Amino acid sequence: MFQLNATPGRTSLINNKEMLFFSGYAYLGMNHVPEFVQHAQKGIELYGTVFPSSRISNTQLSLFKETEDILTGLTQTTDTVLMQSGFTAGKASVESIPEGSVFFHAPFCHPAIRVNSSSALSFTDWANETVKSIQTNNYSHPPVILSVSLNQLTAEVYDFSFLNKINQHIICIIDDSHGIGLLGDQGEGISSRLPRKANIEYIITYSLSKAMNIQSGAISCSDQNRADKIRSSSWYAATTPPSPSMLYAFCKSQKLYQQQRILLKRNTKLLEGLFAKRKDIHFHNELPIFIFPEENDEAFFSKQGIIISSFAYPDPKGKKINRAVINALHTETDLQKLAAAL
Image 1: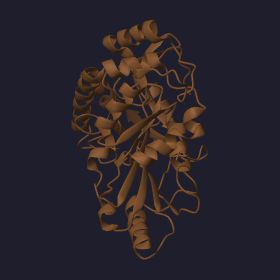
Image 2: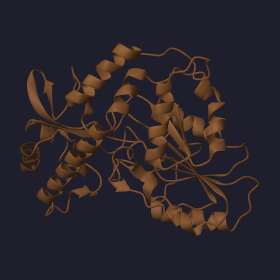
Image 3: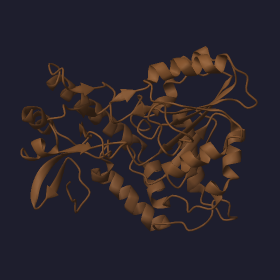
């Protein structure tokens, strides 16, 4: 385990030694983009660091609505509700579902949206079983499908085209924390590839911290009634809202996000080429995540001045998952050093 004294970028100082950093989830590297930092500083001047007021107070910051409108347009939904964090966004989404509803948990469901245990099946097998079960049963409330959009630990982006086979009215809650800001031409996340059918209500919940570097969560809803119901919940009313200074930076940085996405895609493609002949390294061409063999752990890379992500999840006692997480700040030389280490 490495103890860090500052936010890493493409490198990190460990015991006064600079090491290449291929861990964490700061995909776009926004902490080290000067213009983004300047926007955050300006936000502090305008709004301070925190806005200690309920979201249902009679005094409101227009900045919250501005941010929600940007996210609604990005996700191609009807309305978005800003929350304190991705976790509270997930919990508020699940609690908006009527009692007595039947839940279908996909594999690796995040605790924020999990009601019962996740499926132990593969995603494809679970999807087939879910379609069969929903199509052959009647429900007093619309059945609810719970899933993450992708698995950042195994470098998989899930295919939701199976939803086309369902004709009953369903509710689909998708945690897109690792997709929003990363997937798609505009960073729209999983939303652009979801089947759009009248019988499907989408509740897309996510953290804004992973790619966009904003300590906040949000829920983008395809149904206005759902958004209204969430706004009437204690999850919305009783929590301190996100820092307005960072939301200001978010609103002012849309072009910067696009710029960093281009750099990240370039880096991902470059490393794919360097690993093209390695059959023991697993990756997905839309994700900046590369899974290494068991023997290539943190100790192996540390000896070569490189920090990777290496820990067991979801079972802390399980086998460690060794991954390199690329960000937009890495240079071609950095990536070549990573490949050469293997």
